[in-house]
Length: 125
Image (cartoon, rainbow, N blue to C red; front, top):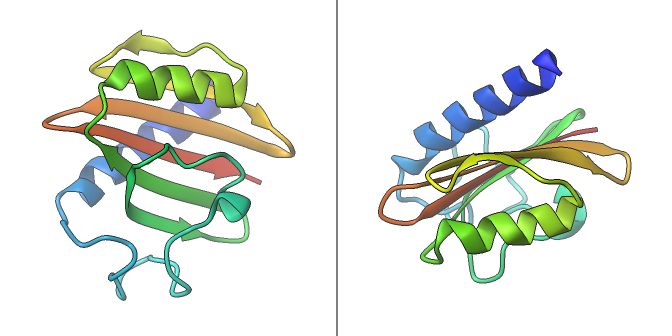
């Protein structure tokens, strides 16, 4: 459990760092971005929140990740991903964590808010 919480904390920090760049994954060509373009639901293994903008995304041999932004309220994103993973999260709408398994992947999803709702998804193969 401690490893999963550390995993989620690192993913959250990566998301916050990624939010400072207004470049979307579709136009980004540097850093750790997947050169093939934005991540797909098939690669990510969970659904991408409807209407969300992919801020950054990437994939390694062991990890898949995506950082999303949406103008929807955090409660809608929380309900969506709790349903998607079949797991309840914890926290308040300003900083909420959901962890669970889907298929052969373990996921940590962090949802927080500033002027929009930020969703950080990290899956470990």
